[in-house]
Length: 112
Image (cartoon, rainbow, N blue to C red; front, side, top):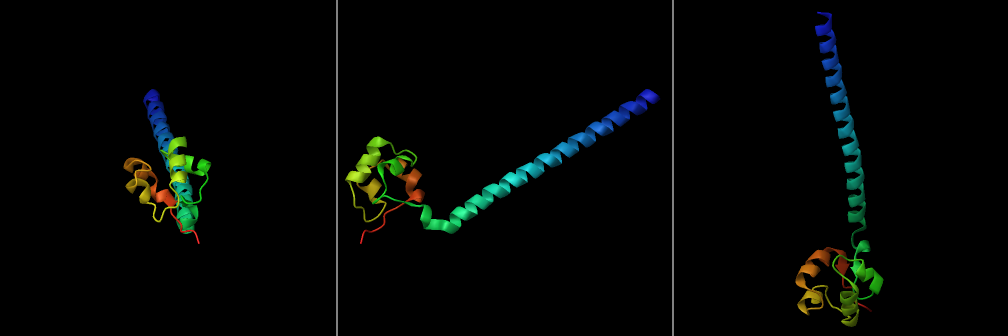
C-alpha cells in the first residue's frame, strides 16, 4: 500500500512538473511573439522610410536585397532613372521572380 501511494505521488508530481514547464514555454513564446509584433508594428509605422530608392541606392544597398547580386545591382544602376519600380521587370533589368521578391522593399523616387 505504501508503495502504491508513493507511485501515485510521483505520478502527480510528474504531471505538475509537465504542466508547469508547458505554461512556462507558452509564456516564453508569448514574450517572443510580442517582441516580433512590436518590431513589425514599428516598421509599419515608419512605412516608406525603410523602402530602398532604386534611383539613388548604392550598389552595396542594392546587393542587400534578396536575389540581387553584383550583376543585377549594376544593371539597376546602369538603367537609372526609373519612373516606377515596375520598370525593373518590365524592361528586363531583373527577372520578374526576383522583382516579386523585392517589390515591397523598394521605391522609385523622382529626382527633382
